[in-house]
Image (cartoon, rainbow, N blue to C red; front, side, top):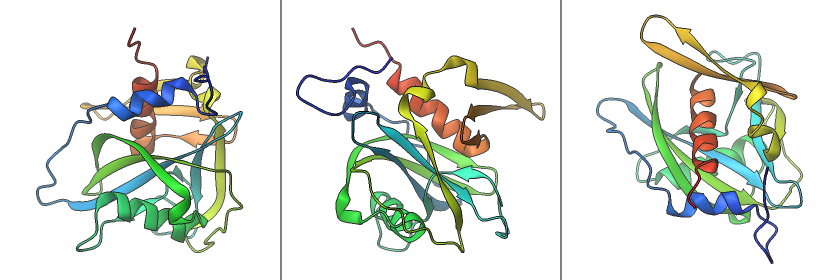
Amino acid sequence: MLTTTPGRSMPAQLDLLKDYEPRFLPVGDLSGSAVLIPITRGEKPTLLYTLRSRHLKHHPGQVSFPGGRIEPRESGWDAAVREAHEEIGLAPDSVSQLGRIDDVYSPRGFHVACYVGICDPFEPQINEHEVERLVEVDLEELFDGSIHEVKPWGTRHQVHYFHFRDGLVWGVTGEITHILRRILTTDRQ
């Protein structure tokens, strides 16, 4: 269960992100990319995903975080925020970085830097070329163990699945969601 820090509208668990030391993976020959894991402030914080447009060449119809390629001379945070603005209309000045979580690799040859940001609720401006709709998950739902399962993928990998009410999260996004959940459920007492 989420607990609110006295005098704040943000669950105390989100404070764990400030001190978290992420696992940085080498980029090597992979393409650098970044995602934003947006969480809305409020009485019932919401984790925001996108449902990718069905006409896209890669991962059509899948649930993902806003993100994309890091452009030359652009930081990972700047890329994640830029992509969130392009995909869902989240204004860059309305999101603050809460922390960074572990990097992940994508089977498609991407190194993914993962940033968690907090924002006020906003009216999405959906880029229909890239995104079909916003998928909003009550942060409390993330902690429901009954919606999470792990399945083998081939002989060497395991894939995390989250069966949220508003959509299925799996693959790289499932891995990122699993890392976030693990951090936020860490008992630091």
